[in-house]
Image (cartoon, rainbow, N blue to C red; front, side, top):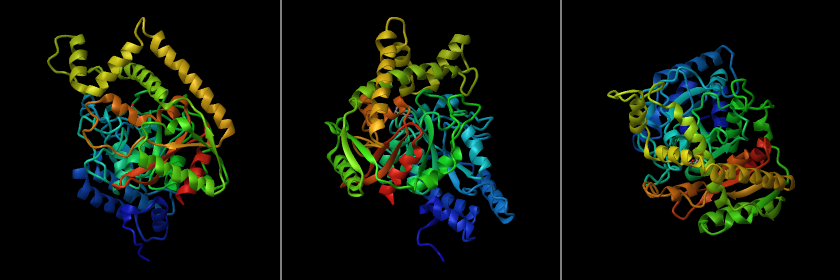
Length: 478
Ligand code: GLN
């Protein structure tokens, strides 16, 4: 029976069912996405590179496995788009930066290896803010991505290309990274679902580092269940990343269907000035939904989120300063050709290779770590981070989940904040704390503004409570 929905709009569950019934092949699915991408991506610019031949080869290998009854997993044949900061052997790895120029990765990140061994089809590489620093995808050295709901607006960032891909129908699934909100904020702006797993849930091996103590790779999808499926394919311990944790990663989908009545905390501090009225109304309607379905709603108090922004920008710039020192014009990518000596190679290559936002963060990071300022800034920020952790873990012994808006407002206009870094930083005011504390957090769509821009609802829970978060989110979505 033909389904009503075009292939590029279907959720993973529908595609898997159609593959199983023999109504679709992995090649026909990918071809539909290729067509859709050719039609719309010249304007949206979600992809930085695609290798159509290689992806089609992977899709036909999956079809062959299916015919021979040797499927590698439940998602065998399903295409997934990859943020261009995650290493994939033989494909460009630009990190949205000129400094990596034409660099091609010689190896696979662990998450990519896992996707391959589960039979997923690796589709295009998606646009991002340079080295994942930004909230709009406008700091990409290769031009901005547009929001598919309104092409005059940003898709969010830094994983804006991945979010746009899923929202525009270029891929049913995508991977992003989230250091301070880069999965949840673009998911909210593009009207899809995005999960930042607990720190340690997913391996970071092969992911170009921006702020190592904060970031995680995570899934984007059109539904909570799709996100659960992709999480199962990437999560778990990896000997190549000592911060990854051994745990059972098998039943996220089943867990996402286990509904109960939860105790839900609503932090007053997240509904203060600066929150857009339409966003607040949509989030309050979502809270009312939970209450109606039998959950206990409790007003709670958490540290002021604007404090978290200050702490985040001290810690992430300090780590970026250190992580980005490896891009020196010697080992990877761009090298300035006419340098006088070794030091000049560094100066000229970094000067020409990095964009403005990356330079700003390297300078800030050098400052907060410098002699005389380290105690005043970096050490203090780490102390406050520890207090945040204590406060959040305390509250999370009393409530199962914390509900907040994902962002203070819906997607802003392209170019609207590029001249004002502080305004840009505030786009992450509600998301950064989950990274500082290492907690899992999801963004799901919860409505639209009057001008048809999507609004996101964030749910935060205890470390490694991904199953609970998925179930809470799914109970709202289903
Ligand atoms: N927008 C935040 C920043 O600019 C978060 C980025 C991210 O999560 N990678 O740092």
